[in-house]
Length: 473
Ligand code: GLU
Image (cartoon, rainbow, N blue to C red; front, side, top):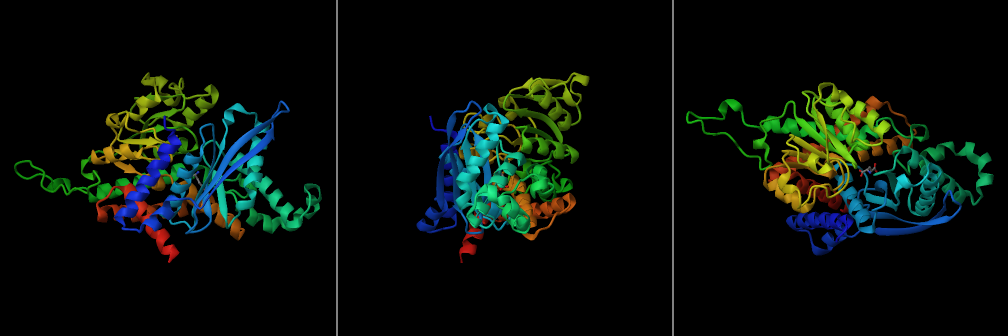
């Protein structure tokens, strides 16, 4: 059977090819967009706690740097493979262009189940990976960040190792001799630290980065709902004396089906960093989150209000998984919760479905059972091309990953910018900048979508490719 990485790569290449054809790009220009600039396959061994060496395979794929340094996360997962990393690197190129950032796209991955190793093994693996990629990354070359199963702590280890490595190459000296020189390097190190984003705060990370992907997703969702509301037909003009709808000018985006919304109900698949903050911030913004799930299962809350993401996370930490946490967030108090599977969560009759875990979860097998009217792709590639076409035809609005989850890389840019300029911003300043970037990104894609009568995903790819081509000129 084809692995999900290969499928995801096919989906990414298919949409680029389709968009390039619509834009009447030459074959060679199209081919250039499909092929990455460089594929680094890396092998390194790490001493494990039992004293034995274990060999790891990892990747860093640099897709395109027309708009600036390659940018993208590093994923730790047992299913990481070359096609998956290539697909994700390609999506990063599009995502950075959509978000209006001066970056290209790249992605890294290590084949490992991080839950199967000790913390000190994880540190040694992270550092070995940083050494392996150190010769082709840098603040103006390629800027990695966290992705699935990597976090500020891991990025901190990598940053440390990278700075050590580059100091060594700069001075041609050993680690032992480095210590006395460190004071003189402070300023240079701030810029060197810009090689990674998503760092811990005390290593040059920025306030607001941890929440950024979820927060940006809620900002994009609100921007979408505002557009739908402002463009929906005036209810007073909707019916004539025969009670027939007269003023339902279709937006070709399914917006005319959306008379619901306020408060809207949401189901979130995935309760990692992205899913958690999306659920929390959506609730703070008046949405009703009715269900959440992690890889082991989920909970459905049937009470009147939103479930309490903070309480649920506390419980998940105690119990090790969400299944069994249905008592949290007031659910037990009113006896209205139940445990559900991941498959069930995707098929719930909610207004908005938010896949925030892994790729290809909405596919040919379950697409006909999806009931949500809006899907916000917070994971990378959660809806296959086949399901995307099917659901869009049915009138479902799908906010594509390259727009919906671009808040993460947008705040990565703000972190990089602060490091490069030696500045430290308040969280409020970061969030305000994020709002401006998200609104601008959304408006450009929405306008293109309405103008060309195309779904948001194709519009996003078209805007991104236009921006890349104009940079080449
Ligand atoms: N891994 C995140 C993404 O896929 C963030 C990338 C970044 O901050 O560079 O968008």
